[in-house]
Length: 155
Length: 452
Image 1: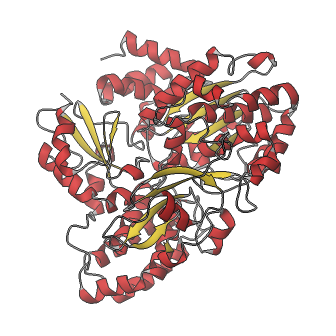
Image 2: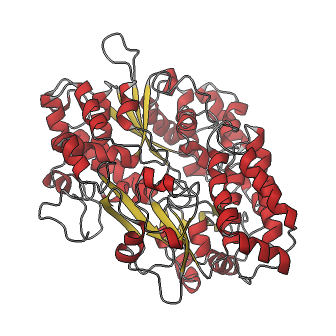
Image 3: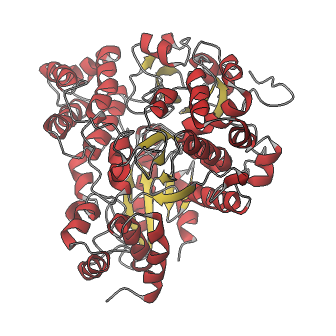
């Protein structure tokens, strides 16, 4: 379960942006998570050794950051904005449509491991509310009946 | 204000933007006068003169707090004996609910932001800059990444920029998430891969900031204002404004309007003009009730008061703040208690837990507001909420998160009193069903990171 050559290469490429290895920890965790989807205890231990940090130090950041996952997640992350602009523009109906489509609640992963549904605060797309993000793709305004077609595209 | 002059300099921050909505990269940017400010500064100006121009322009920070940009820069130590390295950090962690202007600038005009950062770097004699982008800003990230590559390729970044002898690098850093990272000192912790709690001040960041080195932190839009100030001068910038606060502003309107979106207009444009002219007015069937003028931590302004000029001073006189200048509208079909609950849920969730009033007080406010919204509130709950407005007011907490949260709560208790009372007396939300309010405990438990 140790870091792959590929992961090490990408982390090494980012190191010159920071004055020391420890400061690159957040970026290193992002790099590893992008390949493995989530950060297991084992990979955190490997990263700690690689960066010269304790697992606890890494975890103090990982457990605070909402986009670092310490539990397994699905192949695609669906983030549905619940802040006040989207809330006033039909968030509840949009969330209900997504939950019906996926058959899971917030914080849950579909049984086929395809999607994890998470709440998210304002996506900076209030003029396109109600908005959601799948992986790196922003959608909005999303009418509840359009949810099926949007999610269809993510295998 | 739709009648533009022929050269487009009335809207300096939008000037290079493409009408097709695609990002303006180097060719578009240079064709619109881009990097001329940088060229002028490197050829003709001393670093301190750039800071002086920014001071003379009366530019105030566009991230929400409105601190004078030139004054901030002028506290950076200069010269041979100054500690090195020095840093410039661009706050692109746009996570304030109701703010959507930095995304607009980063996606449509990324070179403008970079030029502003480079000019700031020159002005304070910094060695490197960071663009701190929020976790979910993948499109802005892609735009800035490409713009950075172009800027390096054409000698606007790197060593010996445009043959001037000035060297400066910009690095892109994407956040791993949380609203707290947008607080400037917490952002420096996040950049250092530390847990992003805010820092105590003093020391100020310009004395000991990133890695304890002198650091200037400004918002995306603040940097975006700088290139045209340096190119065209402070007096020109001031002349763009409708009030004595200089320049232009990226405003935005969201909610039940005909044309939601962002637009650059003279500073001091009225809220009414933004809503009725630029956003096309309310959608049929909806009436305006109130406005959140500049992000979640600004106080609501009532529909009767929207003739207010959207600048720092006028908004304070209206008992609110300019904040980010992006309006979110409360319409007559949406429950004001529910909206206030939603706002407070956000702040309670995003509290870092460092200081007691914020950690405990916000949760308690959510609990009381939730009771009222769900129809089991008591009349005395309103007094307890009012007391919380005082308990979490400014200077009683470690940072500005909780005081920010109190601004919409205070305004809601003042402006929507009748709605609160009606909820309590009737034991239900008169706007229900399906207003979408959530049980905060259930949602918090649903987050994977919360239980990891």
